[in-house]
Amino acid sequence: MLGLPALSAHASIAQLPEQPSDLTSLSLEELGNIQVTSVSKKPERLSDAAASVFVITAQDIRRSGARTLPEALRLAPNLQVAEASATGYAISARGMNGSNNSAPNKLLVLIDGRSVYSPLFSGVFWDAQDVMLEDVERIEVISGPGGTLWGVNAVNGVINIITRPAADTRGALLTTSVGNEGSDVGFRYGGSLGTDGHYRVYGKHTRWDHGETADGTTVDDAGHRTLTGFRADWRRGNDSLTVEGNVYDGSEQQPAPGALAISGVDLVLGDVSNSGANLTARWNRALAGGGSLDLQAYYDHTRRTVPPMFGERLDILDLQLQHSLRPLGRHSLVWGLNARQSRDRIENTSPYFAFLPARVRQRWTSLFAQDEVALTARLRLTLGARLERNDYTGTEFLPNARLAWKAAPNHLFWTAVSRTMRAPSRLDRDARVPAAPPYLLDGGDPVRSEVAKVYELGYRGQPTSRLSWSATVFHNDYDHLRTQEIAPSFTYLFFGSLMEGQANGIEWWGTFQAAKSWRLSGGFTALDEHFRLKPGSNDVAGPGMKGFDPSHTWQLRSSWSLGNNGELDVGLRHVGKLAKGDVPAYTAIDARLGWMLAPDVEISLTGRNLSGGHGEYRTRELRRELGRTVILALAWSM
Image (cartoon, rainbow, N blue to C red; front, side, top):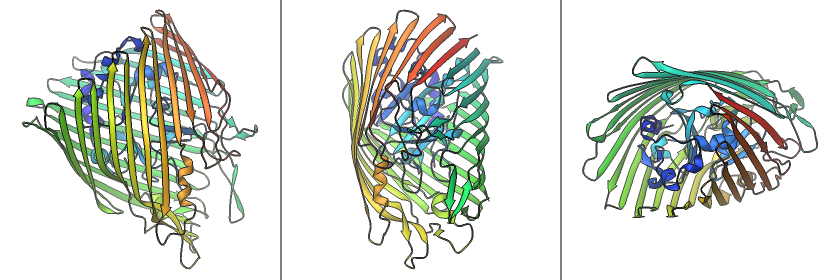
């Protein structure tokens, strides 16, 4: 489930300084003063955040040439972003980027406070997630546990996508891009609502072409998506109100193989269709003495059809309350509660696979509290806990303790101990093969919540006025990981929770101001995972899940301003090989050249994978080969 940090996020945006058009004109100290809200459920400077958090700014996104959310997320060195098809991505932090029987399911993603993880499999359908990237204020990427603040499923990371207030998007904006793999066009218009409010409306249409495998075979993953939406903000005195909503509709081909063989029968795969609508309302009141009261509610409706297997209609209603008390001596306390309900209706259209029961109602409720204690002027202790109930495993306890030492104004050392978990999904409990008994796969009633105990030690600082960097080492102890077991009768399979393991790793990134108009940044991760079966398990393939994760990654970026009108950005990123699917290591070069034709007109030319083609996920015969791509983009403000 999720907590309420995004509520405070919108209250804090107005406190942020206006971002200049040239990112390199921002000093490293000013970058460290960017406020984040995802770490402690209240606005705080990035340089004071006691967690492994990386912020992707609006300027980072613009200068990268990214046209989709997954492309923008590649900028975060603490994420692994692997593209399997035009709209299919495996995205995770600190490993666990898939298993033998599931897509990645331990990363929580929110867009303006609305969780987009699917209760069907505890993961994210990335083909259904889209925003006007030009409206994104920042993306806060936390690698590591977030259970106390965000609830279950925030096991290895949290991505918090925060869009700009409507007051910052007045006037008209037209964007378009075209390349050898697709195109998009977007339009946004914003204005005033009386004396206290502002609004924006927007629309975006994206089209992507099919890809190819390394041997030139066509990958059936072409498709299109249309998004429309609005946002309205009002502020009067100590109160602020935001209402926003989106409607989208899309369709894409299912990638190879073009037919799926089950029990000797070929099932031809049709186009996947996905559509939905959502509405979110947030109210904030600033209280005397520095406290605040936040209330958020959202409704999310999604439809997905995956022929010939199943169709799904999902409705989610979520209510959240958060109360930040005014400081009481050395204590700064925040508490909140959350109630969430879903109605999931599956149309099982294949005799060979089914979710049973077909219709399910689920409820989640949670209560959390967190206290930040100033032990000394430089030492602060944060203690928090969350009680969360779900229909599958009952009440779960998610505690967290963090200690932060500000050794000097520009140097922060921190350590943390956390317990987090992933609750079972419908895929864990309700999957059946075939659709009627006798079953070859008979669900997973024994499946328990997957648990992670996480230990972290980190540093964030600015040794000189031209250099800043952050580093984190971590150790994860996993228990009750999902396995696929053979029944004692040897007549069917079922899901269990009979695997455990450990993960050790390091994350590092930094920024160096090489010259007034030239900035360099880089990042590095290393990961060592070990999984083992517990007594009673016969899932010999389970420990091989570490094969979906690279042992190391690194990236380098150069941002150079070419006078008053031009800018050149070059990125170099390397990902180690994956054992699963025999995906070789690769190094990719991306570049973007941007030019202001007029004060309100920008044109850019972006090249991706300029070093040559490579695959990132799945077996060689099925995976999309990412070749050289050239994109011409135009943005016109009116």
